[in-house]
Amino acid sequence: MNSTLKRSSLVALAALTLAACSNGPTVFRPNTQQATGNVQGLNTPVRGLPQTTVALRWQNKNQIVQAATSGIDLFGANASQRTAKARVTAEQQVQLRAMGLQVTPIVEARMDDRAGLPTGYMTYGQMVEKLKALAAQYPQLVTLEDVGDTYLKSTGQAPNNDIWAISITNKNVRTAKPAFMMTAGVHARELAPVELAMKIANEMTSKYGKDPQITQLMDTREVILLPMVNVDGRVEVEKGNAWQRKNMNGRGIDLNRNFDSCWNYKCLNAPSSWLNGLTSPGSETYSGPRAASEVETQAVQAMYTRKPNIRASVDVHAYGEMFFWPLGYSEKTIPEAAQYKAIYQNTFARHGYSGGTSLELLYPTSGTTDDYGYEKHGAFSMGMEVGQSFRPSYSEVEAMWNTTRASWLGLVQAAGTVQLANPRR
Image (cartoon, rainbow, N blue to C red; front, side, top):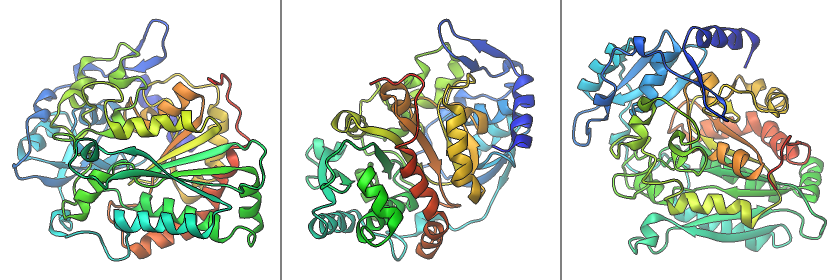
């Protein structure tokens, strides 16, 4: 985060009430005197009701925290401009305005009207075939594994829906190597992250022995990619439900709120209003009945046990061009913050991405993929929001890759250089 934005964020936070948990981190607590809207009302069922995409603008931190923790379909946030988008009902628009947010309906292409995927994108089936082809073509580099079933497969409804992991390294170099793990496709409608993960896989294999940097990385690092975690949801998107975000368990569970890391803010004395979206099955941030309840979440968590050499990881989402580090719910600076900031400045800050914790940039989060890796396994874990839409044209994805390629390689390089203050393994 640049110094001007950081100063303005601190000034805004200083104006709000702070609370500290016993034996826990300092936590941002909303100023309830500013909470004029009926937050609970935002969790009324929306299925079947007309929804409109709106632009939101907030004046103070409390307003965006209220909106985000209510469980509405919030996306495309811009921290520096204090803007975001949301997909809401007419009643929710009224309630958001009562919170003090500026709400403006916007006209844009309705994703519901688009069938399947934009031209150029791989389907789940095509992705699996590509992964198998890489394993067959580069046996000295690639190990391909089915690392878990999806909800629909575990319940006998989709026998072919597996979660795949591809590990890439020079197998002839048998010394222990630090590993970098990337997860993508946790939210089904976010298309670009899956393609970026596959581009990294292609880069690390096709250019080994030809590109000196790639060769050095594969001789000294291991790259582990889970290109599509939420397979069931992604297949639903491919069928034409372009807004599908959560997994397919019942009304859906937000996998990026389901991890066993301060799930539902259980680690701290958080205000009850923060639980509104997390505990409402109809919300887009429903965290599930318990921590790590979902088989997709369990598959990702198990990777840290399957691959104890994971030193750094990144969970990639879309969209908004942001670079996150832990902790998503605390104002307390972690010991490794300077290292995170240095890596950010040397990589995605160069492309104009905002950097900081979720709480610093936007609003508090818990049970997330990146917090889990850091808190439970001592990994140097990160989160990202890439691009400017859920469904960019494939030419935009290619331009994104060409622009940021060096930064992705920088994250892989960092897996061998980062030092955790209190390693958990």
